[in-house]
Length: 188
Length: 188
Image (cartoon, rainbow over all chains, first blue to last red; front, top):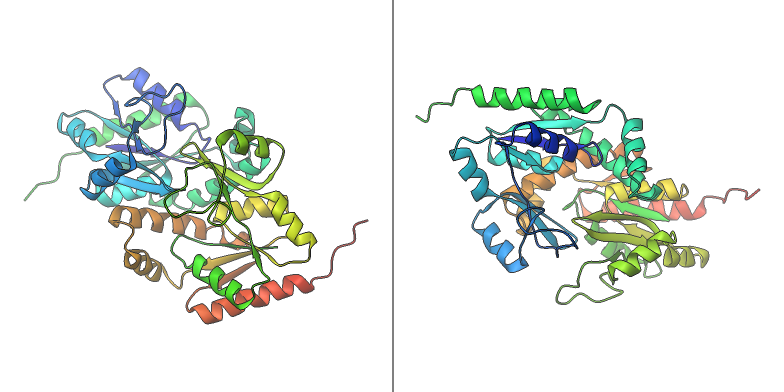
């Protein structure tokens, strides 16, 4: 299992899309959330949309690899599908946030954590401004968040600087392939 | 204007309640959110509950000192009430998250930012476990978040270690009082 994390705007979504385009056998986890679907979002593709009661039941049964709450909404990574795909020998990819990645590592020490880093603070700022969805206050907030997350990069198994898509994807592919070849530990 | 921020579980809410109990003339900002109210939550006291369309209109008019989106919900600090209370000579207190505090400073350089720090990682973990609202995965995630936010503490004007409530509140009161006495800059 490989976990991709990094600051907002670093290009994780593009990297994941390219990885799956090159190797459609890679399986990407879909997060569950209690928030309402937005127009165009599809259940099971963008998110698994759940009621709060259902989410809490699944959570209390240990059904999430990691979960968290913000503003009273809940979001998490369903454990079942991840374990089923791992058992079937598939490459499993999680694209989650930095804190979530560390929570996954705590629960599943075998997970390989990749921190996707922007080439520079200035490059990240340019990308955030360029995508046009944030005003200056939100950009300032995201940059502060990125600086904070950066402090957690040393806890990751690998750091990949996303300068250009092609070499970044190749580096992640190499890590995925390497995680596959690692001999399993003895069970006892 | 004084901004209190720090990791989840550090005791910000208790500090704010004690500050206001001691000096009821302190005015605390109430955040706006697009999420639905939960049972018992009161509009204008716990949050200002807004529709997404209203929030976006206010935001696009520059009506938030800082705002952010998570899971598609929006949250922000309404600018108007803060400026009115400042103009009326009141002490204004914002209790927000660490990234939000830095965004406020960017927009209002005169704001005094206080980072509330736990005495240790172990003390924060004990507090998070003790309040019983998080399972181990969520505690791991919050600790990772706290470690990340810690990296931003040097950008704050003051760091107060919340070992015991009384000295912490006195320290914040002293900073509040000091921020009041600071002579205003010339306007030109």
